[in-house]
Image 1 (tube, rainbow over the protein chains, first blue to last red):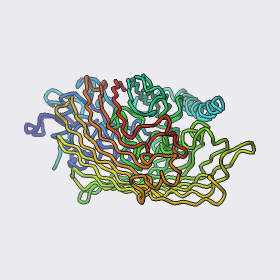
Image 2: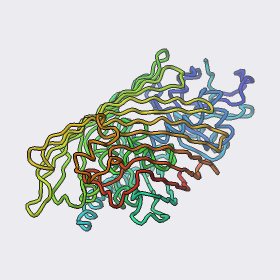
Image 3: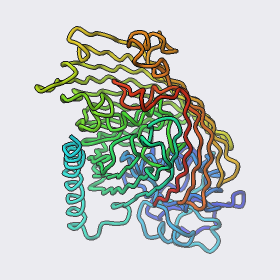
Image 4: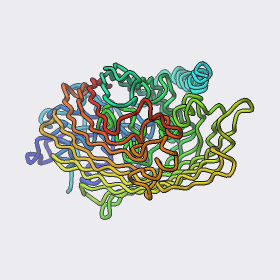
Length: 130
Length: 408
């Protein structure tokens, strides 16, 4: 699916996913569940692979607040607990927005975010309902 | 005794560690196409300086000490959509706070029993971490806890090796509801091997016998209302220990110890302010040990309230107050001093700490922490059962510490 067909001017950060995922609309609650690792499989049973930027990256800070309506340190607490206490798996951190886009493109079941969807191809853009 | 303890501490966990590493590498090698998302490595390293004035909390000569080292490495391998193998090994050096050395922090098989968009149920088999209190699973993770030294009333370093986790099985059930919020239920059952050093830390060097943890059962429940800044929790712990006196000369007799703890906690996470607090009440029953007919079951209480203020994305300030007394009917320790014929001063019955601190993030993975503690009382200094008033001769003592930490 190509982007641009979804009106996204209200936000400075867009949620994207691998084309294999057939869930083009998510609620904020669903997105939160996915990013806090409380939902780890899509409706079709495929495992969700969650990608993020480093915790101090400005785009990550914006994504947390605008899209998840959470503060980045809340995510840190949840992810650190999963990663360093053996309870589960946290999102995979990549270094740059370009790496993040590439990772979502090539990983079936992946979800991530980009600053702008202009010129971005080969990923689905997710519409977020509040 | 010390040599024996090293063997116990390192060898038993190392066997498990090697098992996990080899099993993981074997499974990884037979699946050469294992994707990045199936196999993950993470770790951390932290080194600090700590200076204590007025107690043996870190060292006996009270000098500035670099005994503030924490190193950890973990791996996680997704065997299938429902099974995951994971383990973490840590090296800790905290001076007198706990035994120095390598430990297997956790090594477990994670079985995802049930999964839906709103429900998750996991069973963990092996060595798991205590996931029941606010910071019990992150107490050894320097950047995941709120301060270098945690409130000793609840996260007592002298009990660290017993309280941090157990060998056995644990269950976690999570439910997410769009209207009512997030619910988490945890249950665990297991036990810990007790090293000679751990026995010495709790009982004293004069206890020549063997201590065994018979079992430990814990349960906890957490609720975060939908889109709320608050989260609330409650937990229960039940654990029995037994002491078998040495056949040779031993100051003590056979004995049984039992802990029952009830706790509640709350956490508020706002944009700039974070508040948290925990309250624990324990019944600690001792039968025998001091003499064959001894019986006592005092009720201990411990609590802390903590606030953190995020000045910027990099700088966070901390303020905390905690209070502990080992017997709620003897909060100022008068009875303790009287019953011991004056051998144990009253200030060994309680522990209070006022803490101020700050942390600064140089990057997403590098942090510096600084803090100062003002303590009153020696109720959280080791050894616990047979205190040492000679070395801990001050009711008031202080501590400052700084620690640099890196993680990936």
